[in-house]
Image 1 (tube, rainbow, N blue to C red):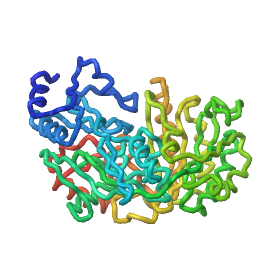
Image 2 (cartoon, helix red, strand yellow):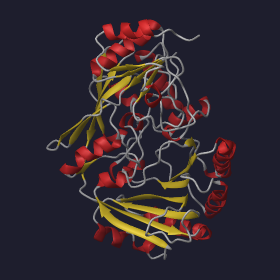
Image 3 (tube, rainbow, N blue to C red):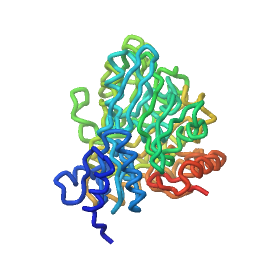
Image 4 (tube, helix red, strand yellow):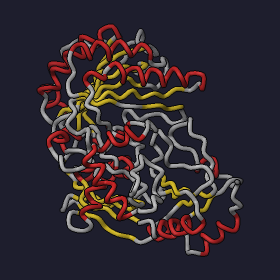
Length: 459
């Protein structure tokens, strides 16, 4: 039944809500409900664009009083579209995007609606950084609460490993803080447990010295993939923590460093990211640079520029998934490379294999991040335009997962997947961690108010 919202909106306004309140019929409604995945077409009754923590508190209380389902929007990047709902309330944090940097203490205080671009542009002038995602448009909040894997995780650990404290608005509208000494059970749960416990309105992160990074993008024809990937695997197995990256099949872009015979066609791409200057990078990356790529770019740049170097374009239909591998033998490499032929080309889709390890694999075993010890992550990342390609894209994603099951650990980074059932949610945390997360959920959100996520059900 369609809810008549006019009186309810006035009720929210009377609570002292200062931000914009948007409902169907408003000129900005369609923009406000558009998220990264163009397959998601949900129509919330009310979108409350909050300006501060008090607005979030008032919105949460309002949503509960009128019985709305509540979703929380930060970056809106999640493939499952959990930032939106049909007929309920969306708490939109995008105007809460401030970042304050304490360079002396190497800390950043980040509001809940900030994106990676907000964070990285604020820390860059100080020669400081922390682990962000692999694109600039990802929301800091959902990324961190899901664990947070990015270009710097082999050097500095996962995003959640660098979390010093957080501020949350609870289901009753109260505000609390979580750290190692304040609500430590909740603080533990925020390291991978997602948005299950409240609306995260602020994060404090540990920062690290990092003035520049070096990016190498190396292209080959697709037939070269198995041989190049074997070299890439062997190199990454022995690489220092400063090196990260990925091996991808992509539609080659029209860039001056890409040969014209590859442009618009399926190509394989080795990405190498070095946390340091180009002269050091060229020495360390020499074994891969020597593999005679058909096209290459090697460039030193600020970390904030790296973050927007390979931004995912908005406006496409999306379907993603992941498997985490304990090892990558030659047989797995051959299967991975062969399945690239099923990816939609041309499109912005990516057939991805990420190396893990380094600091991310060594640290934080006590946190609920089940996939931390994986050696490699397979991440079919589908973006395409035509609805008639939906089943093809989904089948490609499922087939590559099935192919690599013999080496899969059974764990999964939930930020990389959509709705894949409760068993996959459990796999995201591990059974022992899940039981402990249920206890935290039952304490802080016993009514499961915050359930528009990879949900942990309270007892």
